[in-house]
Amino acid sequence: MASPARHLLVLDDDASIGTTIAYIGEQVGMIVSTVQTPEAFETALDAFGADVIILDLLMPGCDGIEMLHRLHARGCTADIIVNSGVEHRVLEAAGRTARELGLNLLGILPKPFSPRTLRAMLRSSETASAPEQAPRPRGATAPHLGIMLPCVAEIDAGLLAHQFHLHYQPKIHCASGELEGFEALVRWDHPMLGMLTPEKFLALVESTQRIDELTSQVIDQALAWLAALADKRPLGMAINLSPRSLGNIELADLIEAKCVEAGIDPARITLEITEASAMEDPIAGLAVTTRFCMKAFKLAIDDFGVGYSSLVQLARLPFAELKIDRQFVQDLPDSADSRAIVEAIVLLAHRLGLAVTAEGVENTATLKYLAAIGCDTAQGFAIARPMDGNSARAWVEAHGPAEPWPERASA
Image (cartoon, rainbow, N blue to C red; front, side, top):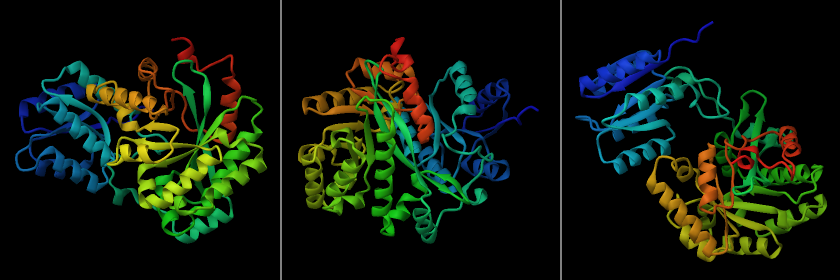
């Protein structure tokens, strides 16, 4: 049975451009609606939704940035293409705005555009949905989706029943393709809501003082999984720490004791914190991170480059690793600015004696580029998606010392 045709909604005040886009959309089998005003656009969205939206930035009465905010307020789940004749840097900034609002940015399309480029974008929209999500209702907004979020009592029950589990994402050496270790990513196997990712529950856990118990369970699971590996390489494990955890001066002792119990050298464990974590209580953060380093744990600054004080944190906290935020990594193929920033970050980190990991590597070309500029390690869907414990164990067995990650090995 054929899948229903996808719906493309175009907002552009130039009717001739709308007609051109409609022709290309119909060529790839889409149902196309074109409108010339923001009011007509919102009416169309209410009436029949959209799978893909092409949005012109320069609109009379309501510019594209304002419209992106309106789509965010609606909980829009359509794939979005930002289209305009403005300077390329402005167009890229608009694309970043869409991403930071949590919208599904399919791409940016400068005017004049190539029909081939637009066709490729529209065809790619079938596979552009975010991972770990069920298929989206067309044009659905948050109220229509009926999204349910857990409550405090469910968190207590979940912790008691050990419903929080880890998925593991491999990190490989960019140059050799050899496996370096994994990052542990927590998931909640909720009995009613299914598998939940951290954005659905972590803020609630932190706000209700349950974070210490969740952190303890995460560390126990990560160390037990690492200790049970038949592979005898000293593979590493990266574990994310909540900002709330950095106020606990005894945290280093707790994790050290768990490592001793599991038979894991603390030097194999990297504790990832964001710069925001360190800034919540700078004095306590400095004390706790220094104690970690004294016990041989490694520290990584996560999401580097997206905050306001990253350089300050590099100077004052004893980091061993810097993780480049996925926003810069995913923009590498299309953004000269992102390439310049990433190259500068790698150079800066190495001058400071830090290893560099790139997050969000989604294709082999990006991985090769990162290897060429000296980035140390990488993780992302191009290498492997996060996997449950059994699947990750099988992945390790398939990628032994003599069998590095195949795309790099054949490069």
